[in-house]
Length: 88
View 1 (cartoon, rainbow, N blue to C red):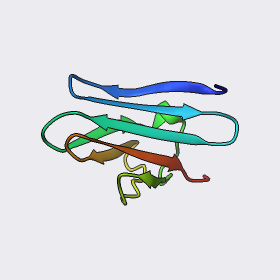
View 2: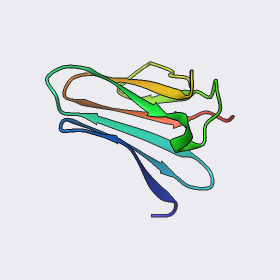
View 3: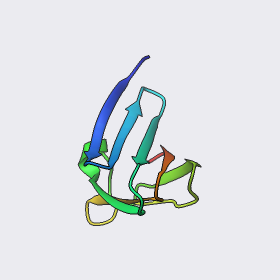
């Protein structure tokens, strides 16, 4: 209940958001579509620098990194993935 929630992306079938407090940032992506999706989130939404990386927590083994100012996040069909921001 502490910290903030940051909306990162949404459309008719998907929603990405982050929960952040003083100790950590967790990114959650939901996809209710019948097909997998790749979402692009500007790194500035999370105050991330080039090369910053997300560590998988649940639903994925990907370790996306900021490249060209954005994060490319893949989420399988009808599922959710959870990441934790690595120390920068």
